[in-house]
Image (cartoon, rainbow, N blue to C red; front, side):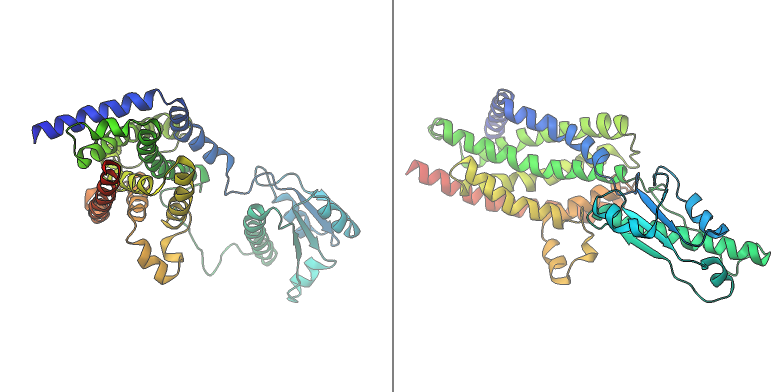
Length: 376
């Protein structure tokens, strides 16, 4: 037993030396846990920012001026007053994303109880801003109309007041979400790539034959690749959380980082086993890359990081409960966003451990078969 552990340790150290001399992989690791996380947080915004607005004001009333004054930076650029016949040319040229048309006699019709309508033209080629901006405009119009009617009636009281309390991300900063989710995706992708590439590298360089003539078992070779590459990912994750997420992006981490890193280490047994399994199916790095796309991208898209599991079809929800990345995303969000402890995430930890054991067994059987084929 001791000799086997020593062999696994020494082979793992050999893997670390090999990785150190693989400049492409080193650059990929640095990029995935630094620039990738930063650009995802700063370059992808789920808030409305600097939206261009045109206003066709046919009413010229106090209320229409309130609509214009309510469109403030940083959500909106200063609104431009345009004519009705300029709407189509300006939107065709991309000059305005939104054009609000206020009809004549809008204020008087509203005071008379006639329920007048506003027209909002949206350039949906800017899809992110279009969807979010429509909600902003609805809220602005509803708020200004309510305040105007309350002021006209001379009363400040409302029959019902709604107080919204937003937990965990009070200002709805998208960077708080996208940075952590990009880090989670990088953990999955890099763990699969590193272990798969390590095995294919042995085959392409001919060093796998050197291992076969040594008194080593397939289990020892596989575990050495798993622990060494998992160690790199855990260290890179800790550095990314501290330097990029907390320091550079100023994203507050609510939960225990040691608990999260323990969960990452547990999950890596599953993801690295997937990398080894795919590497035994592929004969070259291009084939491995194609298999990677077919397997890992759906995992990242359907694990709850991009779309909530509850929003997916019921049959797909049941299938994704068998995938370890689903539980990884769930306990990552619980620990990092909500400050959950082990009492809240132990079920996901257990499901991740079970999935890891199953995947390790499958990868081990496949790896042993490929080793036997090389020896034969």
